[in-house]
Amino acid sequence: MTELSRALFEAPGEGEILRLAMHHIATAGPYCAEAGYLHVDGDLVPSPRNDHTHAESVDRRVRELEGQDGPVTVPDRPWGWALGLRGNERLHGYLVVTSRTRPTSAQRSLLATLVWHTAAALSVAFAQRRQREDALELYRVKEDRAALQQQLISVVAELRNQRAVHTLMADIAASGGGEEAVTRALHGLTGLPALVEDRFGRLKAWSGPGRPDPYPEPDPVRQNHMLRAVAREAGPVRVKDRLITLVRPHGEFLGVLALVDALGEADEHTLFALEHAAASLALELTHLRSLAEVELRLHRELVDDLLTGTDAASAYARSEAVGHDLHRSHYVVVVEWSNRTADDSFARAVGRAASAVGMHSLVTRRSDHVVLVADDRPHARALHEALTRETGTRSGTIGVSAPSDSVPDIPHRYREAQRALEARLSSRERYGTTFFDELGLYRILGPGADHQELETFVHEWLGQLIDYDSRHHAAMVETLSRYFDYGGNYDETAASLAIHRSTLRYRLQRIREISGNDLANVEDRLNLQVATRVWKIVLGGSG
Image (cartoon, rainbow, N blue to C red; front, side, top):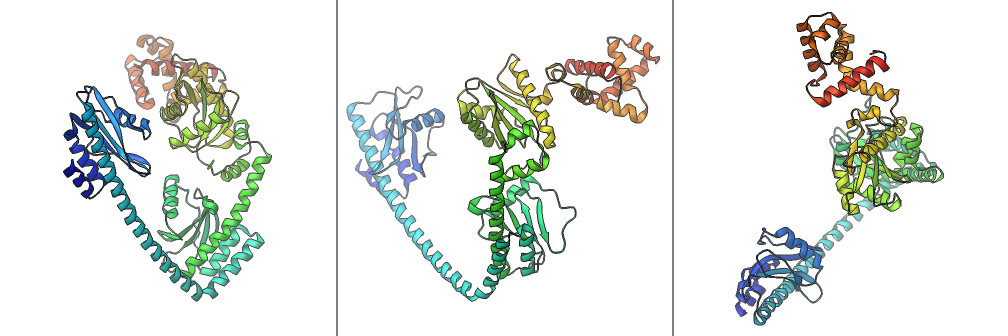
């Protein structure tokens, strides 16, 4: 034990100390080192030497102990124990030890001694590492101080230029000139085209030559990647031919201010002007945001208005005030959980679950369900699984509408989501997610179906054939309708159309090719037959 203790204290780091302890655990008795953990940055990090056979169950048990010693169950090991490696002020880690026989009192005492030596060696190693980190931090502080001194010297040397920038930007802020005034001033100071975009990448103001017409439609993925990249840097960042700085008072992104510098002409004075223009713009946009928040408090919640119907211009402005881009396609998602009341707490849980699976959404609640207006179609299972984790039970139902491309369309999509929810609740498997655009025949049979829904159903199943007939003066839809009317009998169908049997076979093959539907498939055949009946009887055989 003396030699092991010396080796532990001479080990080069915490990981090596843990490895030595696990390697020599058998010297203390009939033991096996099942697993080892180090406490790093508030988390227990498993050793690479851990036995992976039962790693998941052992890992879960160790974390449940929350710093205390306790028994660990491992198959074929009658005895198992998790032993904390403790210093004076903190837990350094764990040793999980198992044995095929129950250890004697002497063996357990020897094991406790090994654990004590390991914990003491870890205490020394952690203290040494803190000393090294403190020395490094002191060095960094000195470097920062030197850099700050150099920066102050530069500021003094350029005071005249900076004073001009400050004066101009202060005048803009005092006058409330807005985005256009900021870009005009910045263009005048630098000679470069200046522009402002909102956080979603849409142009708000441009001053100077070379404005694209039309302005490119933003790519949300690329825009978010760019925002994160710029946010990681201090000061303006060059992205292709632009110098970009974020407008973000109090850490919240409100927009982007940029200079177009295709020839790389920008100098330190240009960067200074850009940064101070961003500060001035931040004040203006913060003021506008405050006004929008006051409007939100005086009027109904945005989501409630969207579901009941509101004008698009107001909805776009208010959605931007809460940091949501309504210009994209949206889905209405209705969530109902059997063991949860649709209160504010559950609404927050639904919001957290949606964020966890990458959905950007607006949330509100009704008497018996929560509603999301989301900018992406949720995965078939991801949202339900996330809510199962939030609530502790899977006894919940989710209905999802078809996509909505405009604000006035959202109330209709809300009804679709409710019908999808009702369809799921009426099914044998009532818990899970149902999408309205996958309901098929139920869409026109279920409650709430209207003439528009009938037309949509016919278009989805017969639209390609109707278009083909219109372009080629053909009769594919009529042929399919007759085929179903005569129960799939080739002779009777051909006779009713006054065509040869081989001509009928050719048309049916073309129908399969054009529509992409298989007449031999029971589901396709049923939907096609219903669609032809609706086309012929309800819609009068109209294209």
